[in-house]
Image 1 (cartoon, rainbow, N blue to C red):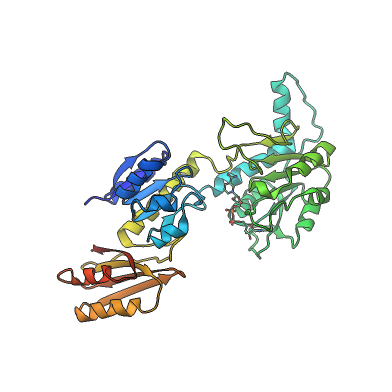
Image 2: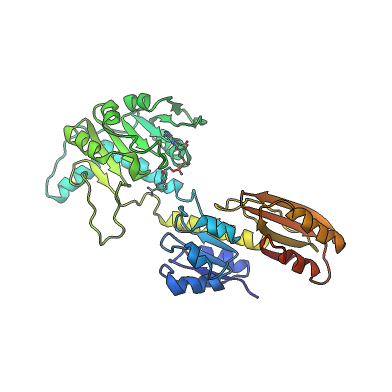
Length: 401
Ligand code: NAI
């Protein structure tokens, strides 16, 4: 039977050729799936592709078991990951496809803040021709302080240096400095010397309001702040006060402690209406290029899982990266509860049926084990029935090369 990919929420069309080439029939839905439509999709899909608005909760998972779920986005909170894992469904996402988009926006904002472009443009929209060079700077030669030197922070580092900025960074993990960037062992040291501070840390207890009144006070007078990371990282009331006092000369924020759920809900923030403050509605990663790259990455992961059984980079599942199945071989992909003795029982069935095992791959998490066996071709369905009937079996599937 032809495998079916059900794609919701207008997943970028770049996914289609990849899935089609692997033999999938594609069904598309423009909006999010919920209720009966979601249950029907789970029951019929070989793989289900969603973005952030389709919630796949544990109750819905009872309706059916796709071979995998692809989240065509970064986050995976919209899926109940542990129940999906227990049901034998790996979930894939695209964690870094929008890294470059965020990095480019950050660099653009650094220039806009240094030149006060947003403020000049707003004044001109209001009819005021202000040609003054006061407080407008080139970024060349100025110091950019990057907090969080991960995927995005390190990209920003490279782009900023190529414009002639001096880069310092602070991370809680020791990181290889790229180019001429220099690490700083404390946030305070970074704050004290940066003309622009940009935040690229995750939302964790250690980053909760890591930029509050004391940290803003430690910034150089006239420095600017960029937060394209998470709303929880900055105390926006303290930032508004620092901007009003002039100690901080400008800010660009893409993320906020409270973000409206849709355009119908008003955005409230103490930062609204302040000069030289760029506010954007959490669009750091929202580009056509990022959407396309997400579609390609997740579609490829779904296809690899379907064709080879690979679960590499699954967010909720034991990860196994598998080679292509050798010609003439049979691959058995078996998911079972992680309890002692299952493997030896499985081996016993193969031994009794005189079926030779040529390769075996196994990964487990505390609840689930995923074992893949490449075996010689065998007659009849005795082994398949025996493995499926094991009380620990969650699911199994078989492909032949
Ligand atoms: P990453 O995980 O690659 O890098 C984060 C870095 O922060 C790591 O090197 C980590 O060691 C460091 N870090 C963690 N706690 C720290 C602390 N207390 N002090 C200093 N460094 C600390 O993450 P990535 O992909 O670079 O993303 C960074 C942030 O950007 C995340 O919060 C992510 O949610 C956000 N993001 C925002 C987007 C937007 O649309 N505005 C789009 C994509 C990501």
